[in-house]
Image (tube, rainbow, N blue to C red; front, side, top):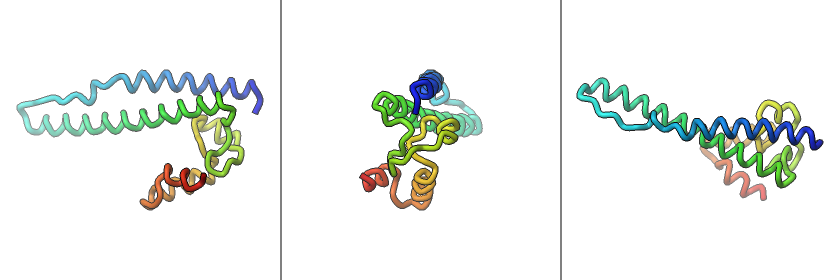
Length: 127
């Protein structure tokens, strides 16, 4: 991968990191609100649950973005962490924080959906 391509991905990832850090800092949605009305209480709980799930999803994405930036610094960006093959440029353009080629990602997703090995266990076993 050329230096200009790496710089392009670094800029994209740094912008995404700033966006996600802003989102993760905003935790107003998870505040517990008390209400005298039971129906309002249920509504607040549902909204809080949704805010927590969104925060969790965005936090995981932020971790992936930071890991991708580390891989750029280490010189391993664009190489699948599982099979060590190059990740396709199309995949990197669509999901620049990806750590896996499409084939390994599909295996990891399938294993996670089946409840078998987690992605971390898959990586440990691959090493």
